[in-house]
Length: 329
Image (cartoon, rainbow, N blue to C red; front, side, top):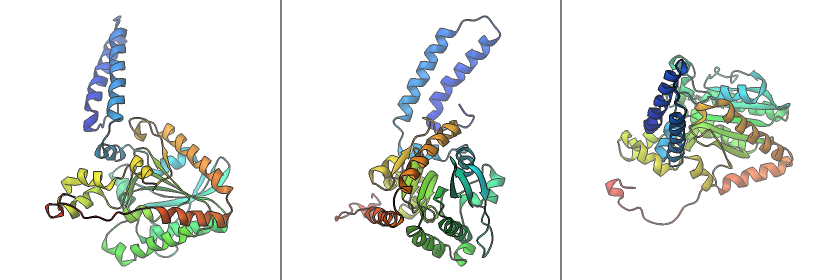
C-alpha cells in the first residue's frame, strides 16, 4: 500500500500494516506465522473486492486525483518508441501544459498530442497544472495539420481540470482556439483516437477531444465543468462537490452507458498509480486494436462516421424541474 492513501482505503491500510509487522517480526526469528498471514491476506483481498466493487462517484474521483497517478509522459514512455517532441505554436510561445510530437507504436508512426500535469509543485507550476492556454491549443492544431500532411494517425491524451481561465488566456482568445480545434478535428483527414487517462475537464479537454474512437481509463472522469466549480455555481458552496459529481455523471461507466465514450480500459483494482505498466499495456492494446480498425476505413467514410458519432451524442426530455427554488436539483 502506498504511503498516501484515501479515507475509504483506511481499513485496508490497517490490515496491511499488521501484515507488514508480522513479516518484520518473523524475518530474523524462527516464528511460524504463516497461518495468521494467510488469514490476513485473504481478509485484505476480500475487503478490497468489497470496497472497490462498490465505489461511489466521489470515491472514483478521489482515485482519479491520486497524486501518484500516471501522467501523459508516463504513458508515452511506456507505450511508444522514438518520441520526438515538437514545440511552439509559431505565433506566441510554447505552452508546456500541452505536449506533442511524433512517435512509433509497434512500428506504426503516429502523432501524439496530450495535456501534461506535473508530478510535484515545481513541475506543476512549469506545466501550469495541466491547464493549457490558447497557444497550447494552437500548437495542438499545428501538429494535427502536420499529421494530416504526412498521413499520420493522431492519438490524444486528456488529463486536465480545464483550459486556463486567466485574463491573459482570455485576451489571447482561448475560446476561439478551442472552438477552431473542434471544427478542424471534425474534418481532419486522418484517424483520431482520444484517450482520457485522468481528469477530462470542460472545454480544456474538448479542445483535443474530437475523435473517431474515445477510450477512457476505468477511474478517469470526463465532465463539462469541474465538480467544485459546478457546486459553487449551483449551490454557491464548493463543499457540495460530491453532489455535483453525482449529478454530472462523469465516470467511465456513466459515459459508456450514455454513449459518450466507446471503450473502457481496465486499471488495477486500486487504480493506475499502483501499476503503471499494467495500465499502459491495456491502453496500448486498446489503441492498437482501434487503430487497426480505423485504418481500414476509407477517409471519406471515416469523416462521415465521425460526424454521425458526435451528432448522436446527447439527448433531452421534456419536463419540469422540481424543487429548483430549494436548490434540490
